[in-house]
Length: 266
Image (cartoon, rainbow, N blue to C red; front, side, top):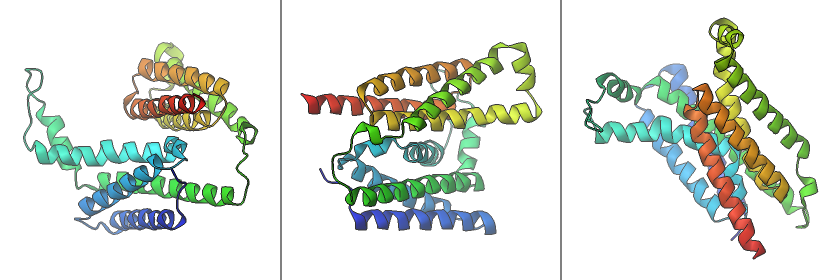
């Protein structure tokens, strides 16, 4: 397997920057009929980036928070709803029950709206930032020797990520199980702060999986325990939607990375 090529990565950076710029233009000037073009252009770029990740020795980059969050946001808030609307133009019954018309209509009207363009803009920015990071790290490593050990990893950042995960988990539990927490987090500034907990937890767990996969075995297992603690807190809180999707992808790829490392040792 090879490392990332310089020219293909520059092309991907250009691709994601164009999609992000078009999305911003569509939001600013209320341009219409751009959703499908932006959606599938961004999806094609994401798939190409994913293929490059799987065929590279730098596969741990797939655990980058920017890539994980960008890909899941694109998939679950644009591509999948779009395909759902094309395959099921009318509500379908599931488990012998009557399908909810309201939820179906919301999903159909969401596709092609400015809300979807906002999602596409966010995903494009995540992929753009991720591509820049990959290019920068590849360029920086090209001028170094290959003997890089775990001491070069940002251990202080791992400590900060563990702290954020545990602190956010505690806040989740406080907001759910205590009277004072329920009162504070139910309205005003507290409600806004509570809504920010899920994105913070999502980004922190994905980042922790990424950095733990690059570090020693002890840090991997410590990161694994922390990630399961984060999942438990999100489930208890009832705010598990996007955060759980991001967490499950991160933890699955984290376990795959461990398995690959064990295979190399054998």
